[in-house]
Image (cartoon, rainbow over all chains, first blue to last red; front, side, top):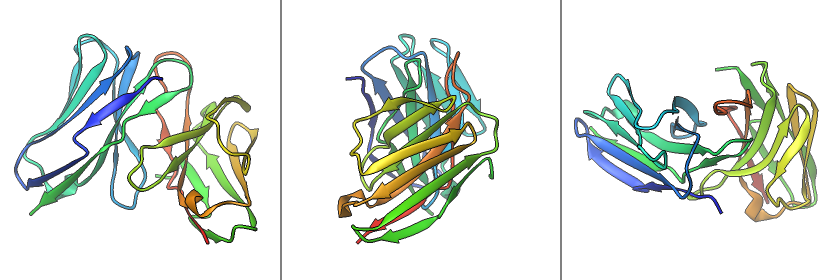
Length: 110
Length: 114
């Protein structure tokens, strides 16, 4: 079946270091979404990428969508303690089914 | 964030109890979802409703019974649950159709089955 794989599962960084999480789909996606879930919270939408090769930035966060629309990445520059949480990618193949990756849990040490 | 609300926020129930989870969205969306989130597992899609009709049912056990009386409300009726059903149950809504379905999640109901 359709799968969205996300790596790494966990990442420990020192505050100020960079962080990247990667997302790979077994099928071509119509778009990809990224969500953040703080500890004890619920997933919150961050951004959606639609076009092949698209790059979007939100302050220290950079999101990329691959040329083949099967992979994506989220890069955080100079992490802060407020960045802790789990980052999920979610692939949309059309219709009503959005497939979530397992998430990357980010720990930031001050 | 009050776009999607869920009640109760916490629920402890025995295996023989019957309870219901409630979700309400105030975003004017036309699709609603139930997800199960267990520790160390990906988000598991349980049910999808679009325009009050169920369009997706991911082989969920019959002890979970959804109900969508209108586009703003979604229920999950629970009966004779098992301890492994303990999890965070998340409701989400979206404006489905054309160009992606960004989902807005409620705060979830933390369910413990004893």
